[in-house]
Amino acid sequence: MVQCPRGTRDFLPDELEKRRAYEGTLRNVARRFGFREIQTPIFEEAELFILRSGPNVLKELYAFKDKGDRDLALRPEMTAAVVRAFVNGMSNDPKPIKVFYFGPCFRYERPQAGRYREFYQFGAEIMGAATPETDAEAIAMASFMIKSLGLKNYKMRIGHIGVLRQRIADIGVPAERTAEVLQKLDKKLYDEARPILKDIGVADADMEDLFKLTETVGGTEVLSMVPGDAGTYLKEVVDYLDHMGVKDVEIDLGVVRGLDYYTGMVFEAEAPVLGAEKQICGGGSYTLSELFGGEKVFSTGFAVGFDRILLAMEKEGIEYQREGIDAYVVAVSDDVRKDSFGIVAKLREAGISADIDIMGRKLGKAMKSASTVCARYAVIVGANELARDAVTLRDMATGEQCEVAIADLPAKIRN
Image 1 (tube, rainbow, N blue to C red):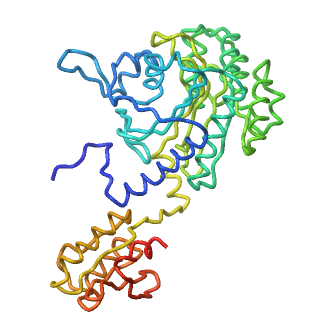
Image 2: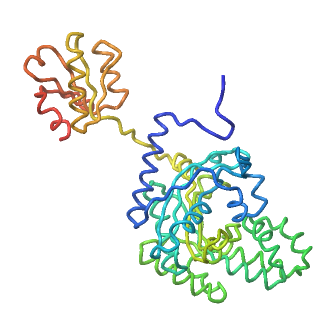
Image 3: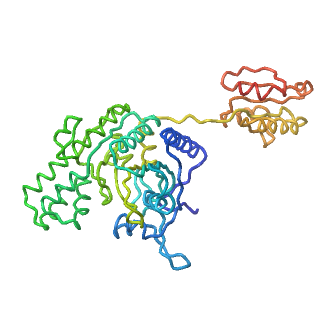
């Protein structure tokens, strides 16, 4: 039996309906915040992702040459493609530009719980400014999305990458090795960071002070411990969030994000129910457009790991209620079967979701089918009722039924 490739999945109707419903929730929140949807190609020039993340990203890329000998890659994430689209077609538009996106991404890595080689990302970008208001808007929308999905137990952590970058520079780490150090600090891999810093010539005391800085975690009271302008900036962001109703935030200078292009505020959302791999959302302020041939533009964005957050919801016991259909039409006998098809056609034309038994089942089995597809009503078509231009309408939840004129059937079902 041929299976789907490792790290990919089939989404059967029940699962896909659930995913589409939750995807719809995220889209509705984004539109409520004034964002508009953007869509970019699933594959891009490989150089786009190398410019964004460095040559090491090649080991994770699904990269290939097309028939014109061009180097292409399936997108491993969507921020770079959206910024490239901004440079190509939106850079002269009035600022800020607020866009959101959803789609599949691809990374060649070891599949594990909630992580796949084909995975889905929902994200948003605000392009045009780096202000406390912009950063607060992005964090607030991410928080509202998580709440709208029904997740109860999650934590929003906010930091400032500029603090760590400055401290790393102050202790003598050269610019070309900053990303290497940040990647270790991002994962709290201090034992792996030590030999790197020692090789650079960083003193032991400076190392320990750096590690201690990444452990600066707490409520708004720790803002006084954030050095320089970054502390003032983060206080402004938190104040805006407080006015927007986002109060359950944690200040964490260990939030690194591990990518070179972040310049200021960074944040992550985590769901403890997922254990060690608990991150469900992350983002921050950055500049990327100059890498892709545009002018330098400050932006703030984030991405929601759609598969991760659905797994967290499942572990919290959040159950999806299948939507079902409005009506299921059942013919009592063969002599009214064609008339039944006429009735289901009228319901569909009236904007009512309706199905019909196409297997020629007896009444009892056809009614079971109506339950299986979660129909709210069964429309039972019998010869006697049909002679009066009527049908029997049964409420599938209560079992109550009544005779309804065919002309009144759409309105009765709607009401």
